[in-house]
Image (cartoon, rainbow, N blue to C red):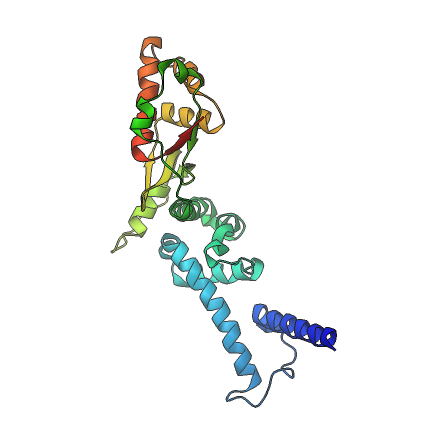
Length: 263
């Protein structure tokens, strides 16, 4: 008896989910009680509308610059399509919009390339803000390390640290579109710009990086040590200037809260 009731409940839940996710495919509402204040069709439409509306609200909150760039009609059409192809299967709505950047590449039309970068930037800002609260490596910790150990030091970055490479004026667009009074900005295809994103305490930060900082960051994140970055820097600057410059880069990262530990 219990098995039968469990099976019936499962079927009812499955039917209800299908109607909420695909309201246009509903063939019958005979399974819905007709004794309520509203007709079965109306009762079901309330849930279906609320489901989509809540998810679109989440996407608008996660991608405010993209909303302004596209305008309400085009953005919410994109959102409807996303909900259709990516129904929520997360326990937290915070994760629901994670596939928007890749989805834009297939659904973004003529705007898809700069729109992809804009949406990726917005999502990464959210990821940086939500990252775990790692311990931070401090200048005091750095000064306590014996000089003979420096060559083999490896550094772990804070979990909020991200590097993004853009071919468009993505950050400029985001800044213009998220102002209290958004201003018009044109998407411009430019030479590749590399951006660093991280969280400093409760504030999400971002800034561009020079070439030497880019490859130094890449070497360390790939498991290289202090000696590896010195060898790479020596290819573009005087050997006697390398240790001080490498130490200066590391000190700036420590000051900004990018380094969590060493090994």
